[in-house]
Every structure is written in C-alpha cells, then in structure tokens.
Amino acid sequence: MKRPLRRPFALLLFVVLCGAASFPSVLRRAAAPAPVLAPPLDPARLNATLLRLAAADPSEAPLRRDVDDLLEGRLPASSSRARAWRLRGDRLHLRHHQFPVYRRGHHPDHDHDPLLHPLPRQELLLDPSLRRALRSWHRLRRHDPGVLRNLPSLLSLPGRIPSCAVVGNSGILLRASHGALIDSHAAVFRLNNARISGFAANVGAKTNLSFINSNVLHLCARRPNCFCHPYGDGVPILLYICQAAHFLDVASCNASSRSLHAASISVTDPRLDVLCARIVKYYSLRRFVRETGRAAEQWSCTRDAAMFHYSSGMQAIMVAVGVCDRVSVFGFGKAADAKHHYHSNQKAELDLHDYEAEYAFYRDLAEKPQVVPFLKDAGIVVPPVVFYH
Image (cartoon, rainbow, N blue to C red; front, side, top):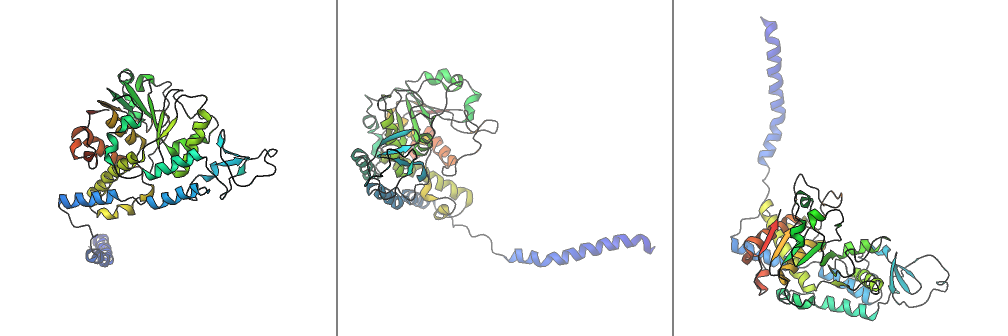
C-alpha cells in the first residue's frame, strides 16, 4: 500500500514547497504601492491644461540660437547634418547645387584645389537677401490663427480655389482607382516628392502644389540625381523649416533653378507653422492622457518635445482649409494589408510625428470642426472636408 502513495505524496510535497517559496514575493507584490496616476480632472480643467501645454514651445530658445549663429557667420552646432555643406572658393556647395556665399578671408589655392573644403564655422557670410528672409521668418514666428484668412494672398493666389485634392502617400491608395477623381479637382496637392509615374490610376497625374518639409529638401539637395522641382517647371513648392540651417538648401535650390524653373521654393509663413504645431501637440497631449492615465505634464518624458513636428500632410490639409472651398483627402491613414508608402518600401513611421494624434484631428476637422482648438480662433468658416479611404 505504501508504494502507490509515494508518487502522489512527493507531488503534494513539491507543490507545498513551491508555494512556500513564492509566498514572500506574493506578499511583496501585494504590499507594493500601485502606480501613481494623475487624479482625474474635470473636462474643463483638463482642456485648459492641454491648451496651456500645447502653447508652450521648447524649441524656441535653441531655434533663436541657431538663427543668431547663421546671422553671425556660423553654421549652427545643432544642425544634425552640417557636413552636407561644403565650401569651394566663394561658393557653398551641396554636392550638385551651389549659390554664392561670401566668407571672410580667402583660401590661397581655391582656384586649383579640386577638393571640397569643410565650411569654416567662423567664416560664413550669408547673401543679404537670405539674411533678410531668415530675419523675417524668425520675427513672424508667433501665434496668429488669423493667418488662415490671409493664405490666398500670402500664396499669391488670385482667389479661393473651388476644390482641392490633398494626396497623401499611404499604401491604401493602391486599393482604389481614385486617379480620375483626384485629377477632377481644380487643384491637386502632393507631399514630399512622392512619385506618380506608374501610379496614375490610383493617385492621379496632376500636381498644382507640392508640400515638403526642409528635412526632405535637405536630403534631396545632397543627392546628385535629385531635382528641386520633381513635378516640373511650373509646380511651386511650399515647405516648412525644421532647422534654421535648412534655409541654405532653399537658397541653393532656388539659385540653381532660377534659369530653369518658373516656380520657386517658398517657405511656409511661420505663423501657420505655429498654428499647426499647437493643434497637433494638443491632440498628442490629449491622446497621452487618455491612453496612459498620467498627467499631461509627463508627455514630454515620452517624446523629444523640442523635435516634435507635425507632418507635411497636416500642413497641406491646413493650407487647403485656408484656400479651398471644398477639400477632398486621399491616401491618409494605414491598414494592416497596405504598404506604409505606396511608392516606397519604407517600413515605419517617424518618431518625431504623432500620426495617431493627427488622425484624431482629421476626424474632428471633418465631423465637428467647431471643437478643434486654436482653429476656431482663425475667423474662417471651415470648408467641407471629405476623407477617402
């Protein structure tokens, strides 16, 4: 009789010993304090907090330093890609683009040295027109929602545009043949030099205005086979500045294209930059609070607040709201069965954007624009905005 009971008894003893060993850790977990979450605020107080934090701009101080560096003849130390700019003789080179830039002193062998000399940090002097553009841009960088009312004149448009199609770059565009519908609009806006050749049935073939950010322009300016005007001579480009030093890329592309292209590259009015940034930051803060239960003030612990940017798509939609009587949006959003970008093999989104926050803004813009913060102070009637998926 003893033999059959030996195995169950051994198993029971093993279970008891394991339980005794784990009991202290169970007590420690039970005694450990629960994660401290922010006490819930009433909606009005929470909204006031989000508006206050969205209005704070931690990038202002470093941006001012960068602008001062450029105006005083130094390439900003914060420029993450300073090595892209090289000097030969009296011209600043960006691989295949160049424009006059003056420097103190003179390299004795510059006419014979075939190498590109590193740009001296203390010897950069900007062209006077570039200095004026940089000063004006920084001086206008303030919160003024009324800039939306003035966009048609700021963009030198003869009047409002009857209908606009804003075409994003999501792979969901390949699931529908919207090309003809896109081209039927009075104006078509495209983003970040996205290729349209071979995709016309899905994305259309017409382009009236191209939107890019200055990081894209900078990367383009470094490649010998990249053109500043990928959509043709007459298609203007509007970009927002991510780094003050990227004004050098704008000047370079405009100078190299002046004899070849009728349209120049224009920098977005910085008041529109500030408006877009505040709206997206508000929605990102709200999303953070809802999903984590933490205080909105802790948002900056999860993101590089000084580098946080809105996307080029957000910029294009905001411009369309300001200049168009009807707005149709294509290629915004994502799906598990769709490529990230219809024209490339990029796998992931950029960390400096919060696309989910932007999608929440787009939903409000289409369904209840009156609740969008900051936008309701612009003094405009938001036109109908329709998203095609």
